[in-house]
Image (cartoon, rainbow, N blue to C red; front, side):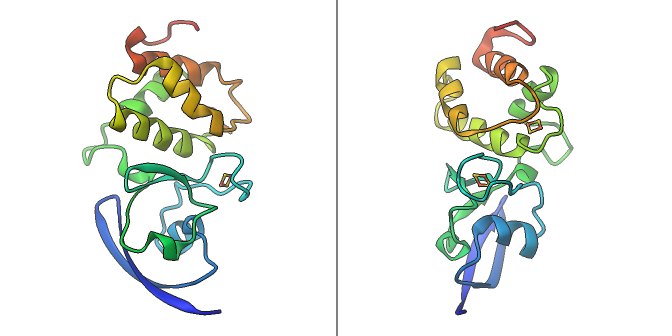
Length: 161
Ligand code: FES
Ligand code: FES
């Protein structure tokens, strides 16, 4: 299998590595760089657990090859909170509204919501819910996630859908 040198930025930090051509970006982030907050589940592009941002766009890292991320600016869940540990508003909303149980799906959901809100800080509840259509959660029944979205859309914490 051929190997290629890639250079990319993850959460603002530059990385350079040699990677096998077949290695997925998700595998690379987890196994080569140690960003294990990116979770791999279905590895078929279905569940959304592996979602990271690539140049500001939410991408399934199980479907993207590491070599395709050469030169990219990648964001993972490890990069969301502030340096002092203050949670990103998306993380805080999920926490405030019990939008997670086991947390396996949460990094991908948090990344998708942050990309939506970075694109449009005034994104509506409907727009954020539509972005969630690519995410599967096996725990929450989705109501906590929907309440978190309502909070992010400016409807206040904990209001029932
Ligand atoms: S692990 Fe990538 S979509 Fe499920
Ligand atoms: S919180 Fe467990 S899979 Fe979503």
